[in-house]
Image (cartoon, rainbow, N blue to C red; front, top):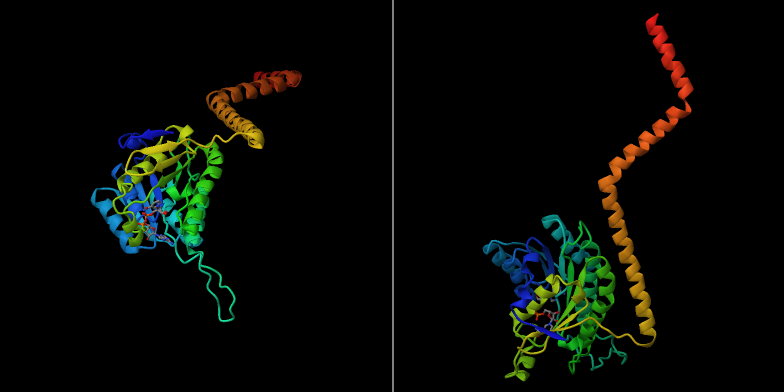
Length: 344
Ligand SMILES: NC(=O)c1ccc[n+]([C@@H]2O[C@H](COP(=O)([O-])OP(=O)(O)OC[C@H]3O[C@@H](n4cnc5c(N)ncnc54)[C@H](O)[C@@H]3O)[C@@H](O)[C@H]2O)c1
C-alpha cells in the first residue's frame, strides 16, 4: 500500500485534455467537484442527474471558466435514460473516454423492521438503495463497456472509476443495504478490471470515509462531530488520478481515503492460493496469448502497410511473367504475324 500526495494525484493532468467524461450524480457533492476538476484541465463533461437545477448550475459554472459541458435528466435506475446520457456524450463530443458511476444515496427504508399488510403478512422491503447504488452502477458500467470502445484508438486514455466507500471494506452498522451495495461495487471493479485491461481500459474504485456532502444525514453528521472528515476536493483528485494514471499496472487498485490524510492506493488483489493460484495461472496465460496475438496482429498490419504495395507489384509481375512464359510460342507467333502484316 502506498500513499499519494495531493500534487501527485494531478500528475497526469495533461492526459485528460479534450477527453469526454460521463458522470452520474454530477450535480452535487463529489460528482460536482469532480466535474469541475476535470473541466479545469480541459475535459468535456456530460452530467446525468435527477437534480436538473444542480446539473444545469454545474454546466453553467464550467462554461463560465471556458470549458465544455452538457447535462441531461437521468434517473440511473432507468436503463433507457442512461442510454440517452451516453448517446448525448457521443452526439455532442464524439466519444466517451472516462466513465464515473457516482450517483448514490444513503440507506433508504428500514431494512430491520418488517412491515405487515392488512392480512398480517410481511411486506416486501424497499430495495431503493440497491436499485440506485448497485443496479444504477451496473447499468452505467455495462454501457461503459460498449461506449468506451466506440472510436477507440491505440493508447487512448479510457477508464471507469467506481465510487465505493469505506463501507466497501467495513460495514456501517444499520446500513445493511448501503454496505451491501458498496461491497458489491468493489466486487464489480475486481471482476471487471482484468478483462477491460486487455482492451486498454483502466478500472479502479475510490473508497472515501464520510465527507461533508448532502448524502450524509444530519444525524450522522452530529455523531461524527469532531472526527476528521475526508475533504471533498481530495476525493475528486483521487477520482482524477484513478482515471488518468498512465501506469496500467495500477488498474484494479482501490484508493482509500480513510480520514483527512493522504490517499492510500491498495494494489489489485494478489490472492493466489489453492485453486485461485491455478485459475490465476491459466488466466495469466490466456491474457498473455491475447496480448501476444494482438501484438502480432499489429506487427503484421504495420509490415503490410509498409511492404504490401511492393509485394503486390512483385506478385503481379511474377504471375504475368509466368503466364507470358507458358504462352511464349503463341505470343511470338502473334507478334511476328503483326510485324509481317505491318511490313506488307
Ligand atoms: N459523502 C460521503 O460521505 C461518501 C462517502 C463514501 C462514498 N460516497 C459515495 O459517493 C457518491 C456521491 O455521493 P455524494 O457524497 O457526492 O452525495 P450527494 O448527495 O452530494 O450527491 C449525490 C448525487 O447523486 C444524485 N442522485 C441520487 N440518486 C440518483 C438517481 N437515482 N439518478 C441520478 N442521480 C441520482 C443526486 O441528485 C446528487 O446529485 C455516492 O455513490 C456515495 O455513496 C459518499
